[in-house]
Picture 1 (cartoon, one colour):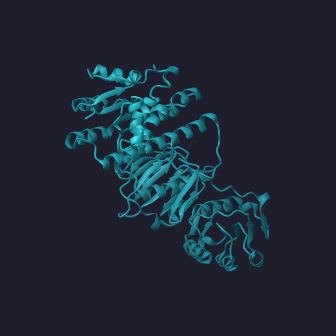
Picture 2 (cartoon, one colour):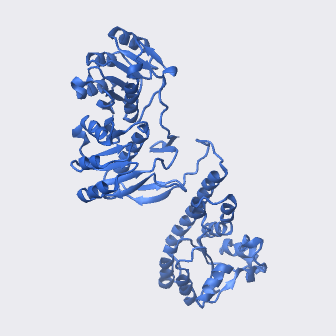
Picture 3 (spheres, one colour):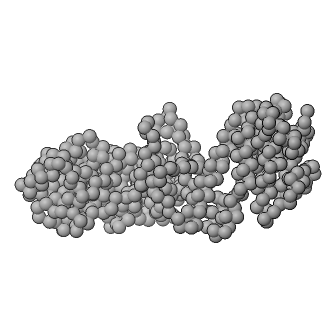
Length: 509
C-alpha cells in the first residue's frame, strides 16, 4: 500500500505541530513549504520540501511555491480514473491525501488601513488554489483549513484508519466557504483602498457574511438566530453592560439608532416597542427629552428600548433606574452614574452607539427570495420643494418636521401628533390610515388641540383630515400622491387646516 502524504502549508500555525506528530505516528509522509517546514523541523519532525518535489525553488519573492503540476496533479488526480492514474505514473506525480492550509491574513491587514501594496501582498493565491483543488477532490483528499478541525480528523484516522466520507464532505464545504469569504474580504478591502464604488444594486451580488455572535433564539423560541456582519464591517455599537442582546433587542435597537440619527439636530429621545416608536420628543436636556418621550405612552414604554441623541447625564440615568427598560442606546454616558446604573440594573443592556451602521444595504428574507434596498434615511422635506395647502405656517415648521420624523420612523401606516416638540399621539402599524389617525387622536386627548400631524404616506380619502380637524389639529404634513388629492385639499381648506404636501413618502414595513 502506497504511503499516505499530507501537504502542510499554513500561515496560522496553531495546533499544526500536534497534527503533524499524529500524522507522522500513523506513517504519513509530510510535505511542506519553507516556512511551515522550518517550523515542523524545530519540533524534530521529518519534512519533505515542496521544492524537492517540483525541482523549482520558491520564486518571485515567495509568491510562487506550490503552484506546479506535480503538486496539483497529486491533489486533483481521480484514483478511480485510469487516464488520471496513467498521467500520474507517466509524469511521476506523487498522490496527495491531505491538504492542511490556511491563508494569508488579508482581513487583519485591511483592518489596519494598510497601503494598497500591503493589501496586494496579503492576497493568498497558492493557498486558495490548494484548498479549492483539495475540496473539489474531497473523496480522495482530506482538506483542513481550520485548526479546530485538526483533532477530530486525527481521531478518525486513528479509529477508522481514514477520515470518513461525511467528515470529508463537511470539510470540503467549509473550505469553499473559507475561500468565498476570503474573496469577499478582498473585494471589500480593495474597494475601500482604491475608492472604487460598485453599483449599489448590481446584477449579481455575492452575499458573504461573518457570524458575530449566536443569539438565544429568534423572534420566538422555535427559531434559531445569529448576528452576522458583512466582510470588514464592525458593530456600530459597543455593549457596556447588561445581558447578551437577543434577536428582538437588536431589531428594536436598530430603530433606536435610526431615531438617534434622525434627532442629531436636537437633544432628542425615542422610546421603542416592537420595532416602532411609542414616544418621541426633544428637550433642553436628555432628561427632559426622555420624560416627554416616555409620557406619550408609559404603558407601552414598559420593557421598551430607549434611544437618546446626546450624551446621557446623571439625572437621566437616575430616572431610568426607576423604570424597566430592556436596552438603552446613546452616543455616550457620564462615567459615574453609568456605574451606578450598572449596579442597580445589571440586566439593562447599555449600548454606546458609534454613529454608524454595519451596511448601506438592507436585506430582508422572504419566501419569494431576498429583497435588497438602499438603507438610507429619507431626505428632510424643505419648503421650497413642497406645496402649502391653505395658509402657510412657517411658525409651525419645526413641529411639522418633527411630526414627519416620528411618522417616518414608525411602522406603516403611521400617524404622529406633535405639540411643542413632543409626540402626544402615535398611530402606527394600522391597515387603515383613518384608524391610525383615530388612535393617535385618542392617545393625545386634549393635547391634540393646536398640535400638528404627520403622515408617512398620502391620505387616500378626506376622512383622515376630517378626523384630525375634529380633534383640533392645526397643520398637517403629508406627501400627497393620492388620486383623491383634490378632495383631500378641498377638505383641508374647508376645515381651515394648513397642510404641507412634501412629495416624499416614508413607508416602513
